Amino acid sequence: MRIFYAAAASPNYWGLPESQLWHANLYLPLADLGHELVTFDYDYGPHNNHLDPRVPSQREFMLRHRPALGEALLRQLKAAHRRRPIDLFFSYFYSAYVDPEAIREISRMGIPTVNWYCNASYQFDLVAEVAPAYDFCLVPEKFRLDDYRRVGANPVYCQEAANPTVYRPHDVPAEFDVTFVGQRYGNRPMHLRRLVEAGIDARAWGPRWDEQAWGARCNADEELARRCGGPLSDEELVVMYSRSRISLGFSAVAHRPKDGSPPIKQVRLRDFEAPMSGAFYLVERFDELAEFFEPGKEVVFFEDEEDLAEKAAYYLSHPAERRRIRNAGLRRARAEHTWQKRFEAAFGRMGIGCAGTAALAA
Image 1: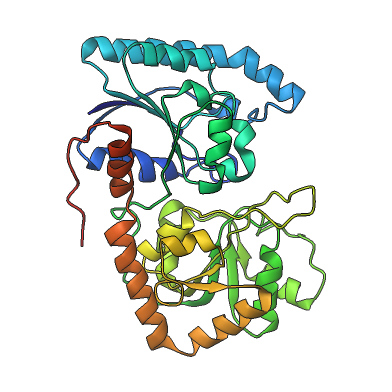
Image 2: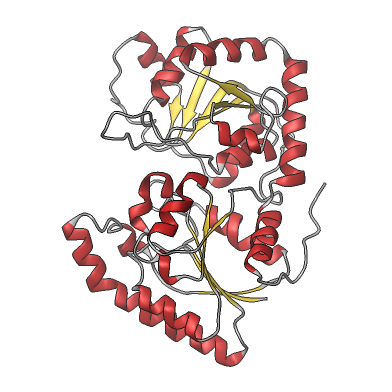
């Protein structure tokens, strides 16, 4: 297929400006499948600071600036379509980016429109306006499918995955006992603090971990702060999975419901990139993730801070068992959880043809 592709290189535009995360996980797998991609040339930066339509000042910015993006989008897409027909429009768009009518105009040209979005677990409002304009919305949050339908959108369940040409084991020594790479928020510092209190060498990298004063309240906090660092590059992140005996994952999102209900959890990109990179993956329990990896055999779940500390200590002292689980997780990830397979399956459900399959590394 000839695909007009419109997505920023990464969603981490503020914390990791050099990241190419979506290029690695969306663009490259589509190209691996044999599709020809025509890329939308546009600076999304100003829009990314004004994404929330519930904030009056941001809503005003959206309404004033998204017509320019829509005009550029239609101009570039129509020019590409005149040169040779476009078979599919694929985007990662927020409502803040473009007026829904621009998407509908693409559909009226006979080009199927598909939007990928992966933060509806707690930020559905950021796409609720534009989602109904698309022919299809790829949705990784199973519990949000009805929300898409409620606003008139056409959701297709498509879980996240990883690209095996990017996420792979590296032949480097295992230097660290327990590591986490990602933002500092919510209960993440408390979990790592408990590991430090248990005498386990726990470390973290990512936005806000390297701040000089992030609320250290005890000796364990101060000790943990000395072991934390700033964001890693995309390549450093992948290598870190091989440098770590245990790689952590957290399922709870940053947002906490105002009604006091339990934290929202979601399956994350990390849940696939870590096993595919050869990590032994110790992750906060979330039942939906058990649909993709068998707990205790391919990944390991922890329930709370105490359970995390106990399981980390156990698996650090049982390297053969740890190796067996990480190898099983790697095999499962490569066999079933590649973006190439996700796109083939999703396009099949949508009735959109695939040009072929990639020859992936074993």
